[in-house]
Length: 286
Image (cartoon, rainbow, N blue to C red; front, side, top):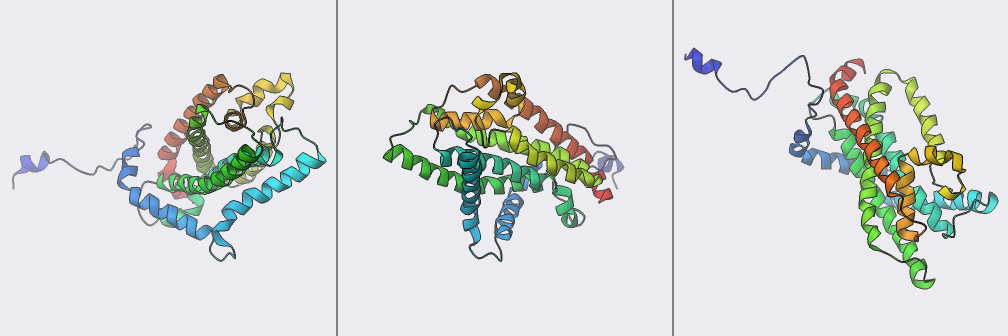
């Protein structure tokens, strides 16, 4: 046997006790793209199995929520909507907040809900949260069509609103929301896998988060002294920009939008790095 030839053989696999902080393995996700789509299909089917109306819940959920907000905040509390039709105002905030909430709720349980799979077979663990984000994006697409139909009704029959080139910002706003939820969800996932009581804490924080985000109220009613803190919330520029695009209400706050991009980018990078660094150790705990 040629010993020298054997020693110089290039290895395709290398097992190491240490893992680089910035070795995220994102290239692997491309090779596992088929598995990602299988996960998406599984989640979509599982969500509406054994239900009477099935996928129609995708449309009914935001509609019911919007009607409740319209009744409580629009009629009883008389919260202003800055001249925007109430159903469109609440629906625009609802679909974006629900998209964020569902993404982060699914991502933060990545290790807990997929432990039975992670312990049996190897694949990039990032596939699970990423497939969940794609699933929620599919749901958002259907809800967005509902929003557009109601928007067109007001545009055609009441001659309200005018669509401009800023509508091109909408896909970017969706990506920004998904990135924010993914980054924060990955961070929480690492800690909730080890400390289960953190889950309860973050559930309360998420529910309170809706009331510091302009889902059911416009930014115009926020007192001046709280405006900076209000706009530091990465979701505030997203929702306010979304409404500015469709309802022509005020100028787009590009400065705060850029700040949201910066904060979200940092959060996403930190979340990816920590998730990848701790994914093996966490599985030993569950």
